[in-house]
Every structure is written in C-alpha cells, then in structure tokens.
Image (cartoon, rainbow, N blue to C red; front, side, top):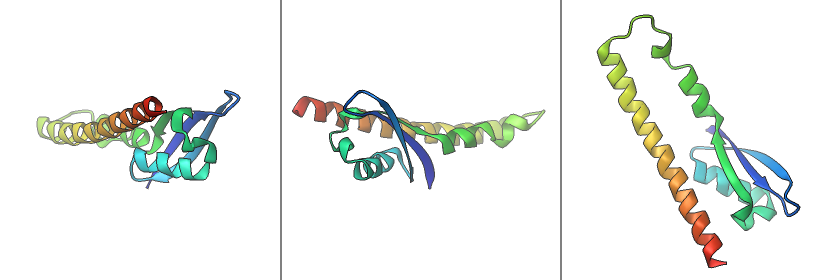
Length: 105
C-alpha cells in the first residue's frame, strides 16, 4: 500500500487534507470520499499526492552510484518511465471524471 494525501476545500473554502493508504490514486480518492461525506460532491478535491513514490524515487540505487553503467541506467529508466506513465494515466482519469462530474451538475 502507498501513502496518499488528498487535499480539498470545505464548504467555507478552508484548506483540508486527509491521508489514505491505497495501491493507486483513484482508490485513495474513493477512500477519502467514503471517509469524508462532504467529498461525495468531489468538486472540493484539488490534489492527490503519493509520498511513497516520491520517497522511492529519491532513494533509487543508481542515484548513489559514482560510476553509472549504460545497462543499469536504461533498465531503471524504462521501469521509471512505465511507473510515470501509469501515474499520469490515473491523474488524467481522475481529472476527466472530475470535469465530467462538474459539467453534469
């Protein structure tokens, strides 16, 4: 499970955050919506960050190596690009869903 922080504003436009553990951002957002009734109308949510992946990126092995070999960089790079692509897909899905919900209201 990864640690996510979901930021939102309440009805009085106060900044609030809730932390959730989930595998993916959309699951974390669903958990937050279930935990905070105000979020059922998710126009209030404006950010979902994943601290677990940020920590993982900062501690990656090849950043600490003094001499980098071409094979290790390309293998790590391909894995990183795949992870980034998956995260962007989740963010775009959440954005599309949020936009659709705001238009439907």
